[in-house]
Image 1 (tube, protein in one colour):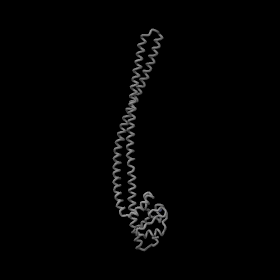
Image 2 (tube, protein in one colour):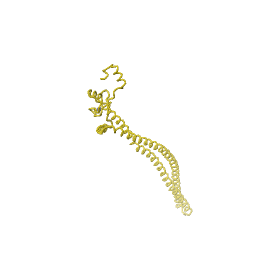
Image 3 (tube, protein in one colour):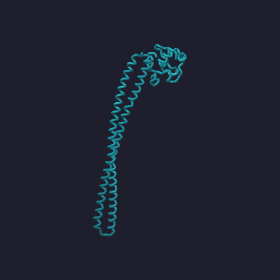
Length: 256
Ligand SMILES: [Zn+2]
């Protein structure tokens, strides 16, 4: 293969690696953000359980006060019944006592409900705290895994970048410019192998005389696919097979 094609192929190989490592590096911020989001979700779950608990305690105090107030009323009405003179007033007060006692019972029921709910929130807080701790532990492990992957990728990037600088040093500015223009046009792939006399990138047939010229070329001339404009290269079938076939001078048909 022509030397110029060998250096371009080497460049393309390193460019593919660079594209890959850059794509991997670009994903790290999102990966870290996903880990942070999991921790934040577990924290807000715990916060929600805690504020529900606070609200329950507030309600409980209110219901305790209700119970006390209704009990006071019951006492007050009872005291008054001792002083009434008429049957009618007595019955009216008895009725008030009954109503106040009903209210005491209702307030006590609400209080009990709140206490049960409070226990439920206690359980929920404990569970949320446990979950948060687990999420934080796994986040720590995951973050350090991501960070070390990132460090490895950054090392690769530095290595590939300096390899590319070395490769580029041996390529003329014009040729590099030409290569890079095709790279931009074709998503990173500027060179296409000719296989079965076709451009392997777009599948277009390479005309026989172009193919023959390609195989004979020794200088810096480049051949392009007429359809996709990529630079064509051809890898001769295994040298040992070719040379043994040539030495045996067995089949000239093989070459065509
Ligand atoms: Zn093509």
